[in-house]
Image (cartoon, rainbow, N blue to C red; front, top):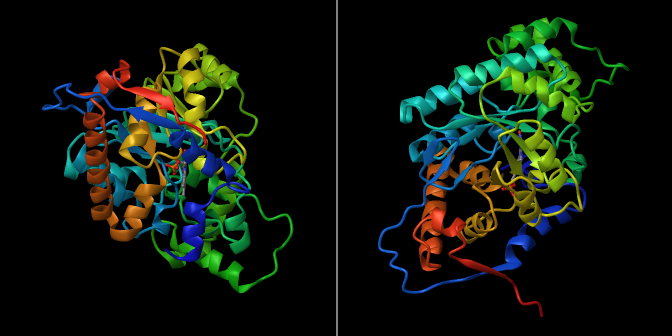
Length: 389
Ligand code: FNR
C-alpha cells in the first residue's frame, strides 16, 4: 500500500495506546485445554438472528477499501459470500452496496450481509440508506455510535491525508438519490482556499469518483459538492438515546449499536429496544486510552444478557476468537487483517485469509477440548488470567 493508505488503515487515535490495549487484553487471558473429549466431529457454526453461519467471525465494516486494492468492497464481499461469512457493508464504502450485494449473489445467492450506518444529519438520507440496505437483502442494521467526530489520528495528520476529501469512500452517498438531490445545497467553503497542487488533485479525484463522466462531474462541480455535502451531513453529533425510537420505527431489521463499551450504555440499548451490540473501540481509532473491547465484554454481557453481542477490536487469531466467545460474545468481527489480505491479493487474498482464520479457530477450539461453539459458550473451556511476572 502507499504510505497514505497504510497510515489510514493501520493507524489509531493519538498515541495508539488503545490499539495496544486491544491486543494486551487478549494476551491477558490464557486457555486451559481439556483432553479426552472426543473432538472427532466439530462444528464452528453460530446462529445469529435466526440464521446459521458457518463461522463465529465476520468482516467488520471498513471504509475506503479502494486504498487497499482496486477490487475494494466488491472483492471483500465476494470472498465473504463464497465462505458464507457475513460482510458488514460500510457507509463509507468505495463501491455502492448494490454492486457488492449483486456480486455476492452471483457467488452465493442470499449470502449473509449486514449494513453499517453512519447516522447522517438528514432524516431523508438516513431513511433512503436504510431502505436501500433492506432492498439489498441486508439482514441487520449496524449503527456506529463512536464516530460522531473523527478521532485524532496523527498518521493521517502528518501526511495531510483523509480519503473522503478526495472523494474516496463516498460511494453510498454518490449513488443515493436523496444525497444527489442535496448537492445543489452543498455549503461553500467559508474562506476561499488557496489554489495548490494538492487542492487541484483533490478536486480532480473527487470528480473522478462521481458516477458517470469525470468531465461532467468536474464542470458541474458535483465532485466537489459531494465532498462538501458529505462533510456537512455525514454525522449527527447531537444524537442521544432518545433518538433511537425514530430508528426503531424505520426498520424491521435487527439493530445493533456499534461502539458500546460501557455496561450502562448496554442497559440503555436494551431498554431502547435494540437487538444487539458490537462491543468495539473502532480498532483503537477513536479514543486513545479507551478500555480494550475485550475488557468491556464481561460487564456488558452481565448488563445485557439478552442482547446479541459481537466483539471487535484486536481479534487476530483463532485463540482470540475462542477467548471472546468464552467470555460472552456471540460472534466477533475483524477489521484490519482482511484489509491487508485484500491489499495483497484482492478477493483471492481475503478468501485465503478467511480460510486461514477458519482453520486456526477450528483447531484451537478442538485442541482446547470443545466440539462446538455452543460447548465453548457453555463454559466447557476454562480461561485464566495470565500469570504476571
Ligand atoms: C474502520 N472501522 C469502521 N467502522 C465502521 O463502523 N464504519 C467504517 O466505515 C469503518 N471504517 C474503518 C476503516 C478502517 C481503515 C479501519 C481500520 C476500521 C472500524 C471497524 O469496523 C472495526 O471496528 C475495527 O477495524 C476492528 O478492529 P481491528 O480488527 O481492525 O483491530
